[in-house]
Amino acid sequence: MKKIVFISIIISLTLSNLAQDLNNVQLPHMRKQLVRKAINIPDILGYKTLKCDFHMHTVFSDGIVWPTFRVDEAWEEGLDAIAITDHIENQPSKKYVGGDHNASYEIALPRANEKDIILIRAGEITREMPPGHLNGLFLKDVNPLDTPHVKDAIKAATDQGGFILWNHPGWKAQQPDTCLWMEMHQELFDAGMIHGIEVFNEKEWYPIALDWCLDKEIAVIGNSDIHDVNAHYYDVENGHRPMTLVFATDRSEQAIKEAMFAKRTVAWFDDKLAGKEEFLKEIFRKSVSFKDTGKERKGKKLILAKNISDIPFILSNGDQGFTIPKQSEIIVHLKGKHSSYMVLNLYTGSDKNPTINIK
Image (cartoon, rainbow, N blue to C red; front, side, top):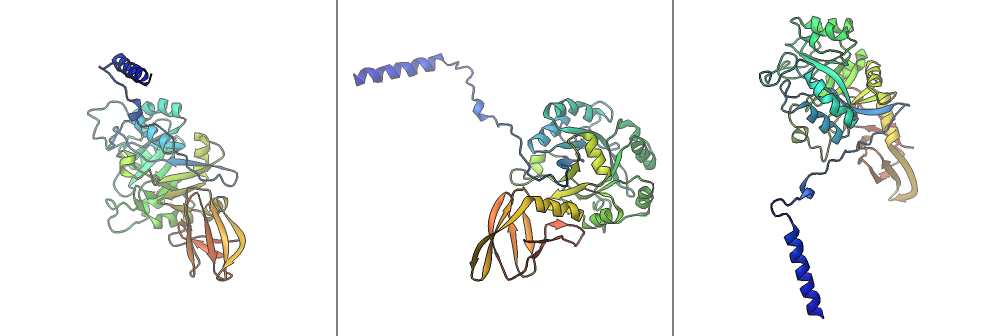
């Protein structure tokens, strides 16, 4: 009987193999599954916390990818909004790709609508210092920015209600020895033509630019300025691209624009936050909770610290320091009666960190 069963199995397997199309055997499991990463940062102060990158390039300037690819990256990495800011003056691939300065936006828009990514029409005015490189965001038409005089280009953006962002102010290719706020920048600021400054760009952090933003009431911005494939440049598996957190009334382009002109923004990069103290403290407050376990060890209180966000927090009071990892709980052994700590990876100035109290 066992022999009959065994022969039946062999015959069944043989027939199954014969039934396969040996000219084309499909192995769909080899394809990478497309998934969207969830970024956990709490909403604060009655606003929605939107994750945005307002500076990136495609083959329509000096980037290496097609516009729809930027949308796919943003979707997979958990962003809410992006701006493709191809250079007005620097288009090395112009010989091979047609279209005007709106082409990258128009190509990417159907994919953005499909994936529910807010796509902002934008362009980068690429000039020598001063004033350097500036992005015009929330434009109706990028083409008017293509004009010889830089102030005319900026005015063409502001006439459309555009938001003017000063890019990488400390970029060594334009400011090799320092990071200066120049006379022309003051003129543009006085004329209402600088609304935001990148305190972080690509892999560069400009602490002095954060002081400018906070002193002059300018929006604090952090962007990738990505030209490459994002996942080739950044370790997106274990970290995140630099981005701007925008605190908006709702998830829409108009709400993002209103929030940015109202300076409700924070730069997020390398597990650091930079911006106004009220925003940073509120993100911490909504992310971290402390609970007294009622226990002690060697005279130290044991406190349970819980962090629900994707931002780790590094605390120190001079005597004692500890890190509350992202999306984790830890037991903290509190020394003495000290309850006031600086959060060292939150920046409210070039050399300032906010202080929180553990209650």
